[in-house]
Image (cartoon, rainbow, N blue to C red; front, side):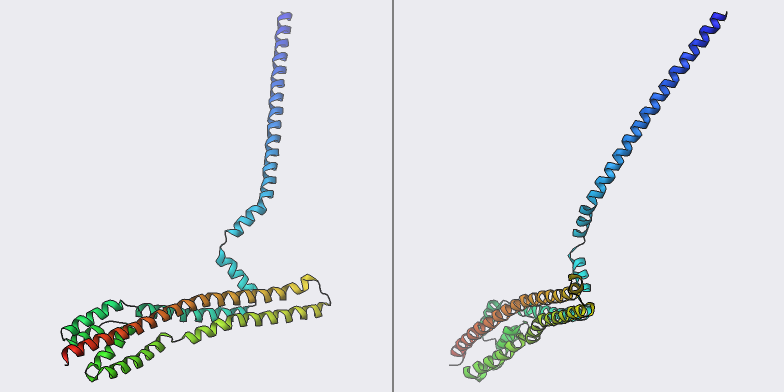
Length: 275
């Protein structure tokens, strides 16, 4: 009986020992796995830290051009940057107004002259006047002035067309002098900011008694930013100004050609109906 108890006790001890060994192995394996996971986490953290500058740079790149411009605008001395911005706003407003006006002044002058010629061939002077009156633009206005004096002779019509053409050409060039003023003012304000920034930099040097880069960086930064913005504004306004000039030249050419064609049409009308 004792042998049986001894055997059962031995088996129990063996079983307990095996279980403890298995548990110990499992615990050791779990610890190793946890350490491995911690190492992986540390590695990932290191990679994240290493990738952080790249992500920051990417985020900064995705901020957009307008945010960068806003930051540089704030950094470049609010007084002079505000003056440059005001010059740009007024200049762009005048450019947009001229572009809209000139675009509305453009018409199909060939069709207008064909309609006038058709009406005059039928002897319908009032119909020709109505066509001119109901058509917008300087070409139609010049033709209307000529039609108003069609009974006073070709010389009178010619003088009237030439005189009124000069008036219309002046209307087309209205406000262009103001645009050139803002084109000239923008870089001038930028250069003025540059000079003041340089003076500020030398004042900082005098106060600090040192010529280190940190001392002069602020004034130099203001100087360069104001110059850059002034030149950019001048370039933008110059592009619009040249585009406006091209439209004005095209309309002036159209008015001259239409005036000559109108005189020919009136001459044919006089030969046909006033013999």
